[in-house]
Length: 517
Image (tube, rainbow, N blue to C red; front, side, top):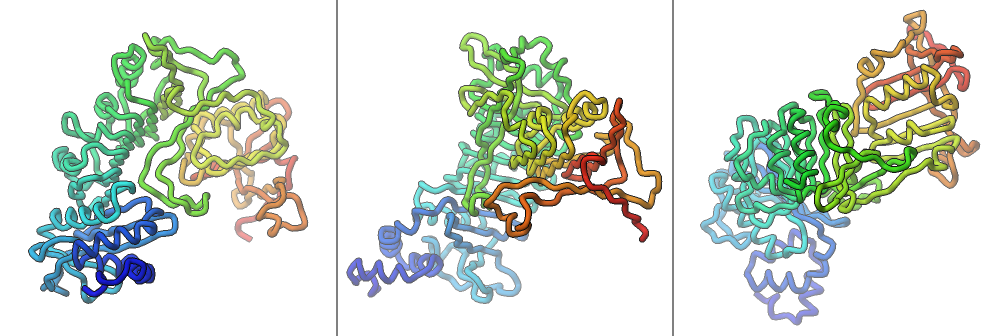
């Protein structure tokens, strides 16, 4: 090959004109060519964060090489009637006997292969890429509910949507080649059955979506550091056993955080679960402790940070209650409310004590949360207008707020409240309002519009939309309203999907609309 005879500076110039796909094809020519490309182009790989193998329906595999400014995709698909015969070629360092070749009839960078040899082909591609790019980047596996992925070596993170009727042994086989992973996520038709001493339970960070099944065995057998279980229910005895074993120093020595969200499947009684646990509280009654940590995930584009790739998301809890572990004195915050159970060590996470902050006294307060709970801010807010974006609230907090306002025991200064939880939480209006004396407008054809203006600071993108004002319009529409005890103050309330809105009538602009006009 004449290219190998050129001076290295000429070779580097030639390679510099080539994008990833032609460079990859060129690397198939010989081992010497591949090593030359690796050596001369290593500076171009420095921004690569991960390679992901996505296994979808009909045995298609999408492979993506990604960095903040790099996106090099290609895919392989099985031989079909459209192209029943493969032209033999050596690609990805595999011999001609391995059934894979470039796809001659499809646009884009793609290959066809014999699906009977899927494990061999995918492992061969992965081995080649691992040698080509090295171990400094992360390698991820993701699958849909159509099929389980094959077991590959040197995988750091795996997200599996379990197909229906999958056995524990079949699921476990996906981790045979890479049993010690940084992050594992299990979703789909997963019923909670795992093999004894499963590799899944040894993942450093484990997230499980259950859809109503019991997660008792997973919690009690987990060997990693961070565990999150969603739509999962637990027996009360299991929660108590976990807390007692941790406190008595008999188990869970590796655990740094636990988050359980049972949605509507199970509600927990904190007083009953903690009654024999010697729970401590922070010394000052006005203090609460915020404990936060980073939970690993598959890489994702964080558009709030300029589309930079992130491999973790922030999680946390806020509580006054904590436990002290016997013998070594390790402290951990615990929170049990409604459908949630949260637990986190102090010395392995970020902790911040919150007192009566001046922030709560701002006349207009807007908070962007990105999925964290805003319960404390809502309950301690002292002024007139409050807005939350991407915030998560426990149902009990929404109920507490409404009941305290209606009974005239709190929130006397509040004129409006807007909560938008984005994808983090959905609210059931009928459930939240069932114990509150909600009134409706007399005429069924009318709805009330309430509008107000929320202050903003400059410079802001909003100044281009509302250039003549230092505020922007907000509002709600609803037929439901509350009457406050004692003074008869009226306020409209709207709870739909991911939004909770509340606004006084006499502190804002009101306009009645006939829905039939």
